[in-house]
Image (tube, rainbow, N blue to C red; front, side, top):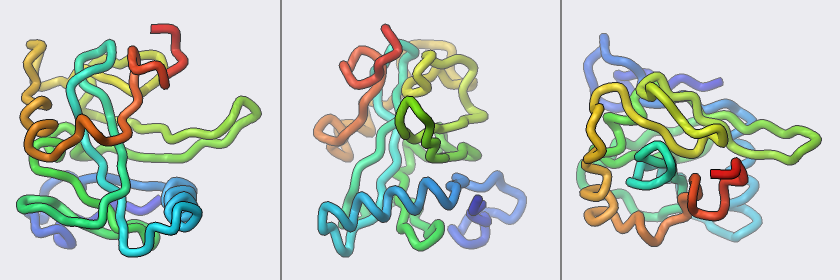
Length: 160
């Protein structure tokens, strides 16, 4: 698993790493980009409003960095996170799990106090209210058009 060092992304040396990504996750994402012929693209990881727990994780392929993005490389994969999503994803881990029931991405997030059974949505520690500011990221970064999945979106499969 790659842990992105804080010094590599321009934050203080004592800060929590932004995100950890396993080699299987990066490898699968690179394979998907290759299949879709997306050269010059990277992975944008974000948080958007929705899901049965309040916020949901999203990932999309993007070929354009934006002002304020935190960008880094994990196992050859370029990764971007916007400043609003950064605060909810700091210290999270992305893995790819392949089992008899199929494969999928799994996100472990130390910032979540609860989540849906499918792992696609969560409620963050720092904010007990239902207004997480994620819609600001959705508006500013166009995440409403991105591939998000999550409870209630029809793609979760957890029964919520």
